[in-house]
Amino acid sequence: MAELRTEEEQVDALKRWWKENGMALVAGVAIAAAGVFGWNAWQDYQEGKASAASLRYQHLINLTAGNDLDEANLGEARELVVEITDEHGKTLYADLARLIDARLAVAQEDMAGARAALEAVIDASGRDYVKGLARLRLARLQVAEGDAEAALATLDAGVPEALAAQRAEVRGDAFLALDRRDDARGAWREALGLAEARDQPLYGVQLKLDNLGHDEATI
Image 1 (tube, one colour):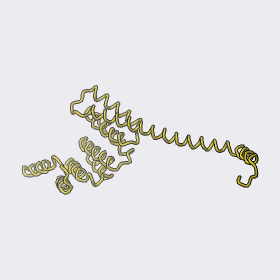
Image 2 (cartoon, one colour):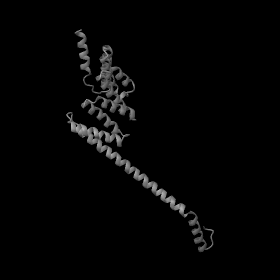
Image 3 (cartoon, one colour):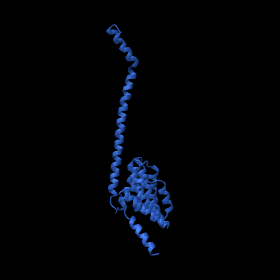
Image 4 (cartoon, helix red, strand yellow):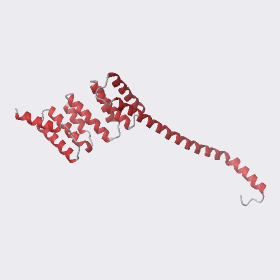
């Protein structure tokens, strides 16, 4: 434009440039504005979902804080689990809600429901620690139901080292259920050793060992 000789030529050139490029410029500005608005709206939406998930999960915790839940609270809590898992299925809140649901199912003697909740965590969660925790609880349930072999297979499927002491304890429980007393003793000793090395409290294991020794002495 600096080479144009008159103001009229400059205005005329500007008009021509605007005619050729103006709509594209407006469209570009509109698209950029829509992108910024869309990103902000998406962030607001995600923050809103996270807040809703957090509030629902906190309500679930409050409902299930006591050990003596009446049927009404149990029913409400399990419905809340369904809401959390349906609407926030990929979040940590959903994983934790399913773990709570397994405990509530056991309280209602719904063993199939407890297994389903724990298996859902194992199948759906992308968090190794949470999956390992679900496997531990599933293995305990399998031992309680008389399927110790399945419990050992569940534990072998993968429990993180952070839960190694608990894994060894449940292995001991499964071995005892199979009448493999030496294996049970070894697993429980391993559990105690791991717990001591990691400064993790592990209650009841020493009592299991003591009872095992007492049983042998009376045979």
